[in-house]
Length: 194
Image 1 (spheres, helix red, strand yellow):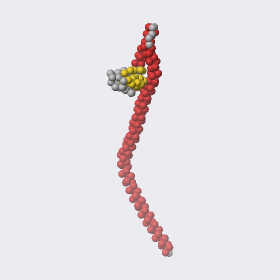
Image 2: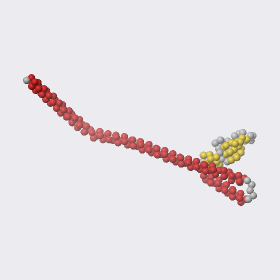
Image 3: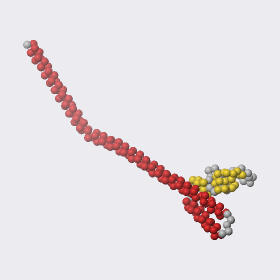
């Protein structure tokens, strides 16, 4: 009988434990229900604030990306424009540099004696026309004779002793120099006083 009694006591204890567990579960469920009610009441406002914050962050990121892309495109546009301008300047300078020896020869032809006045007049007209074209393109002659020597614009090939002129002054021009805007196409070959 003691086994039977022991089994009954164990069963009773198990029932008490089960009942206690059920009571605890019911209490926990009630607490969860109260918490759920409280969260459900605050939830729409909190979730709306959370959504607004998330959207503001996303907007901030997209605006930052847009500004970076805009700045990158603006830099690309400026760089392309600058490269185009430089390419035009380089090609114009090369072309004009190739024409200058012919202009020099026309000038020498004008200085040479000629008996045929019509021929000389024709050479003068061509020389004047070439100079007019260069002026329209923005090509100017570099000031040399009587100017102070500047290695950026003058190429001194000879030094002359002179008591009349100041030192480092251009006293003779062997070949004219030209520039296109601020760009030197060809330096002037000169003689400089010592």
